[in-house]
Length: 382
Image (cartoon, rainbow, N blue to C red; front, side, top):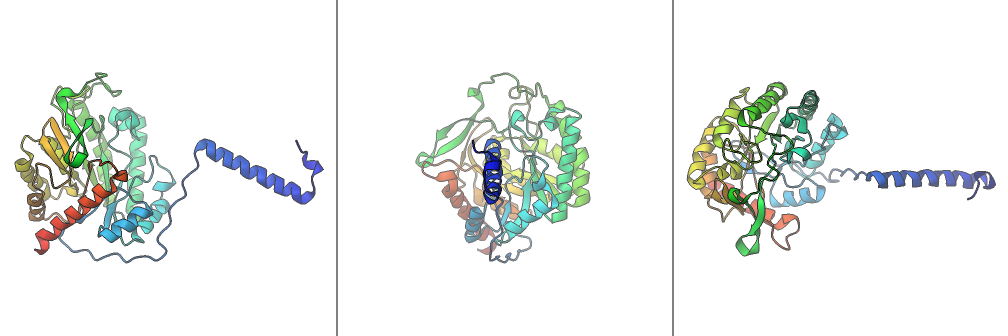
């Protein structure tokens, strides 16, 4: 080992700087080095004009710079970003959210929505599990952080957020093969194993589920209304049988009746739905026929803050997720119903099938963007 006193003065400074840098890199390597923040586009693109009273193509799939440049070219000029962070940190500060909005808008894309760290994850993988487990005082601290995020979102001028009130996450069987060998996300309740019989949340019957939902809404919705941020809640995916539930949990937000009760709690214009048409269709025996009255109910009441436009084969307790053109639900008729009720926000593809050779489902999403854009153009411009 070389002693510092044996080195020339200049070499000693270089040695110390190199040692410090090496130590920092080693520490970053152990902790997982932070990914550099992406920068706005050097030559900013103008935001396109908004056509009042019309729905428009949107997405939530990816908000990286590479994705934004593709979305702009495809005519998708409205997005929900990916999750800024799983916890309250600098990404959720006013400065952090301002940088996110500036970066998105530099590509000529509106940042319509951001997701809160209340995702559709299984309870042990949730960002704030105490909220849906009803654990105090942890859930109170979690709700306080969510409220602070909403206030900062408002200060930046982002109009809406999406979130979930989930315990089970998205329950599925192994995928099955569909058109052209595509892998379809599949649900067949009869073949699911309820093993273990309870989740880590324990038994969550309907009345307890509603208590936890109402506790959250009564704290958060007034903050959202005061700050004029729309709160778009996603349904529970999928609906499971009442009373029996799945692994001790009854998914009370899995069908239209539950969602009607949900929007009646703390009623105001900033409390509504991330209207996942695919999930709602999963709760129906005849989705192609039944979905239109549900769109009309929530659409006429202005409770649809965005739409996840996803098709399925099948219905209640047994279904598969398809691309938009080959499911059981006629999407052209659906688009006409959204127009009928005056829906004027994002129509977004969701849960596309996995296709061998299609990295990260980019081509499946591109197909869905084009299909949805064509439907929208057809109902307004034909």
